[in-house]
Length: 503
Image 1 (cartoon, rainbow, N blue to C red):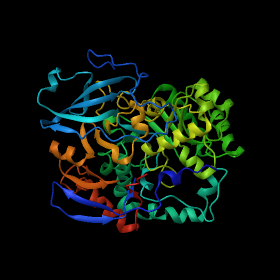
Image 2: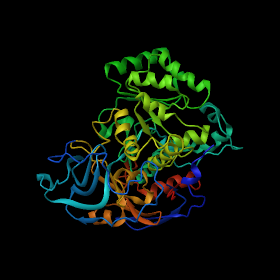
Image 3: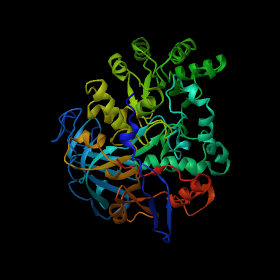
Image 4: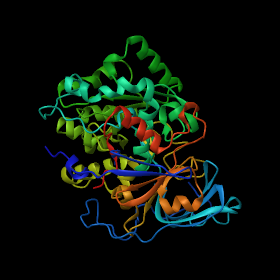
C-alpha cells in the first residue's frame, strides 16, 4: 500500500519558538504543530502558463525565490498587491489586486488608476497571488492531535471499524474531556494550522456558533462574512437520518433554504460503505446541493448518478490511503462529470493542510492515473471548486471584484503559475489575507505594513508573523494570540501536533 505520510512529515521535529510582537515581548517554547473581469484587462489564457512547466508530473526541484516583498506604507484598509495573479480561471502576468476594506475592488494588469488605489498600502509581493484556499472537509477541533496509529498497525474496510476501537477513543479523549473549558482554543489551534497553510475558509468546525472562533478563518457552516448560512452537515452518516428529517432536508434543498448538504458517505472499501449511496438515494437526498465527502467505495454507476443529479464530491486522498489502502476513483468521477474538490480531513489520518494535500493528490494522479490532474486542475480543486460546492462562490474561491478579499501569496520561483501553488512549501506562504485583514506572512512584510498585534515564529527556517487577536477584551477570548492559544492547548495536552511540518 503506498502510504504517503512519510514523504510529507519528517520523523524528527525541532521545537518551534514563538515571540510576541506589538504588545510586550514574551517567549514560549512548545511542541506545537506543523505544519471576472477586472477592469479593462481580460487576462491571459489560463492554460498558457509561464516558464518552468514540466507537465503534470515534474521532478525538477524548485529554483530559489526571485526576491523579497517590498512594502510602500499607506492606509490600513486599502492594499494594492502586485505580482503574478491566478484568479484561478485567468492569469495576469504581471498583475495587480486592489483591496478596499474587506472586498476585492479590482484585479487586472494595472489597478493603480482605480480611484480607490490612491493612498493604499502597496505590496510588491514578488510572489504569485491566488485565492485563499477553501478546505471543504475538516474536523478543526481535532487538529492539535498527532496522527492516529492503531495498535497493531492495520488497514480498515470502513470507517465504523476504526471509530469503534478503544485505542482510537483513547487517542481522541482529550477533545471531549476538555472542550467545556477549551473549545475556543481547540478550534483556533486548528484554524491557525490551516491559516499557516494558506486556507481562509473551513468546513467542519465545532457545531455551536461561538464567537471566539468566528473571527479568524471563515467557518463555512456559520455565515459571518459569508452571509446567512444555508448549509447542513452530517458527520454520523446517512443511516442516522430519520424519514422525517430526510423529508425536511429534501424540501429545504428543493426550495433553496438549504444550499449545501455536506455528508460523510461511502468512506471505506467494502459493500457496507458502498451501500450507503443506495440509502442516500432511497431517502431522496441525492440532489444538486448534495456534497459527498469521501465516496471511496463508489464506482462508475454511482458517479454517473451523482453527475446527473448535480451532486459534488470532496476528496481526501491521504486519509483514504492511510486508513483503507485505497482512495476515491476520482478519474472515473471526473469522467462522469462530477465536480471534485480536495480537502485534508484532519491531522489524525490526513494531511495537516490543504497545501500538503495538494501534493498527495498530485502523487496519486501521477502514480495511478498517468498525470490526469495538471496543476491548474489541482488549484481549482482547492479554490473555486470547493467554494461552488459549498454554495459560497458568491463570496470566496476566486479573485474577482466584489468578492471577499481572501488572498494567498506564494513566493515566486519563476515556475509555471499554477505549479507554484501545488509545489509550495510551508515557508513559501508569503502572505495570507482574510476579508482584507492581514493575518499571516513573512515577518518583514507584515511588520512593514504596521499590522499589530502579531506573534513572531519561525516556519521551516523562515521568519513569519501571525496576527490572531481581534481585541484587547478578554470577552469571548478575542484577545488571545498564538502564544495564549498554544499555552492553553499545551496545558491539557502534552506536545500538541506541531505547526511546522517541514518536508
